[in-house]
Amino acid sequence: MTDTERTALVIGATGSFGGHAAAALVRHGWTVRALARDPQAARAKAGPRMPIDWIAGDAMNAEDVTRAAAGTSVIVHAANPPGYRKWRGLVLPMLAATIAAAEASGARIVLPGAVYNYAPDSGARIAETAPQAPTTRKGRIRVAMERMLREATQRGIRTLVLRAGDFFGPAAPNSCLQWLTTRRGGRVRSVLAPGPVDVGHAFAYLPDLAETLARLLDREAELEDFETFHVAGHWLARGDDLVGAIRRAAGDPAIPLKPFPYPLIYALSPFSETFRELLEMRYLWEKPIGLDDAKLRAFLGEVPTTPFDTGVRETLADMGCSNPGTSRPALFKGWAGSLRSSRLDAAHVRQDPL
Image (cartoon, helix red, strand yellow):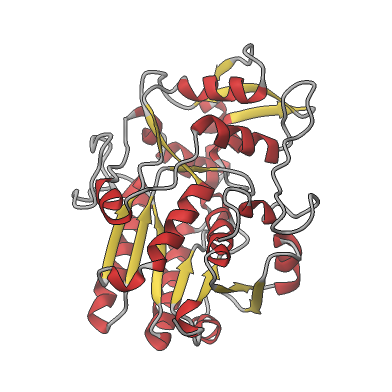
């Protein structure tokens, strides 16, 4: 491949999925650019050892994105307004800017997909061909995003949607473990149950998800113009399976499972858009909604899968929690040359460089 064929632009590289995607692509030999309104701050957040070319620009500005994407073959669209805030007004215009950039550069767009697109009764093994019937505003926006991308194929724009469950992992500020645990003094003090303990849930370990993406892009020429793959990740058949994994990772079998503070969330929701959106998505914890990855396995063969307990342990360590009486696990291997790497450098941890 030429340099252009192995150059990717990541939008949202300081976020959870975007950061891990950038690190995985670097491991696979890609040249990675990233768009940021403040490149200096983004570079400091990602870490000086991350070999990313930071470009100044706004993801809402089609001219900025088009300029940054010139000469690339992939645009990873991982932009995500924090805390569910202003989704309606930001998400679709940002995607429109990325589509314009892809049309100008000929790059394939990568979109991390979610399960919001599906109805609550869709079940635990949703295939790529399942009908999308969202019941929430956020779900309808997600469907609209994918519709925009599918319609763009008529103009020669190619897309890869990689759909997964709830993210968790090191270097992931939006990890679900951040808000499903209470912590103090470097210890997990409790785990919060956002739904019934007898309802299953799908989790996606970010280093595995990013490695899956990199392997798919290594075979980009074999993909359909509009391609979708589901990543099953880790399916926990019971809600209390999560607290068991956290207890083992923390070395503390006494960590209590407590109800999620929904009454407080309801009380504060009139004053918080984030809380209102969180309540709207509560059904994801009350119904067993998971993904079928048969298509992905047929295409890739082996799908990267870290044991769930290992992923939980590495996530908690990155959050500053470690087993009682032990030092924090050495997450940062020799790729970056120092144990004092940034949190985003931790994205290199799961696999040694190829």
